[in-house]
Length: 203
Image 1 (cartoon, rainbow, N blue to C red):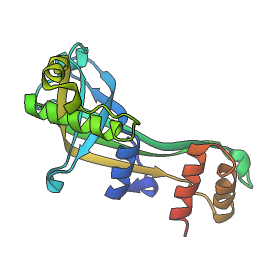
Image 2: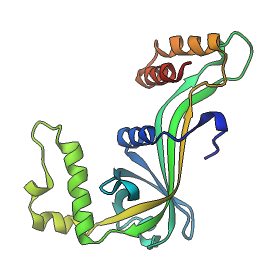
Image 3: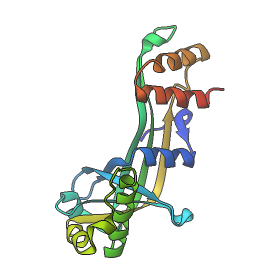
């Protein structure tokens, strides 16, 4: 991901927020050929100094069949994003897109049986806890869960590089910057979220 200095962030709280709110991300690999799979991802910070991404894909997926321990992959998370019209400037310019994104490059570690079970338990708890009648892994019975696990390929991605991008019209003068916020506040949820983010970085 190309990140001009103006848009580069080292805010790891922002990284956590983007991953948490946009967990359905892309797992990208280039073993043999370029492959990409959308999958549910979680940031594991049980050991804060050795945090990693955990996810799983179908064992029938060609990407799962190709990946081995030590292979390089890329986890791509797209956060809030919205179109920025050049009609909102007080001068002629090009339209663009404001967005937040995180890319984590890392090495694959294939999960063992217990790690995959724990991963599926945590992932299920995360999304089922808000349901009216939550169905947790413990409610499904260990025999059933382990049978289903045979079709899952769990991996940990140990980060080697982390890139955080926050492109929020930082290159615009104050009047244009403020007008962009005003216009976004009148649009959809994603646009309003970007407007709120812009307010936070406003000097």
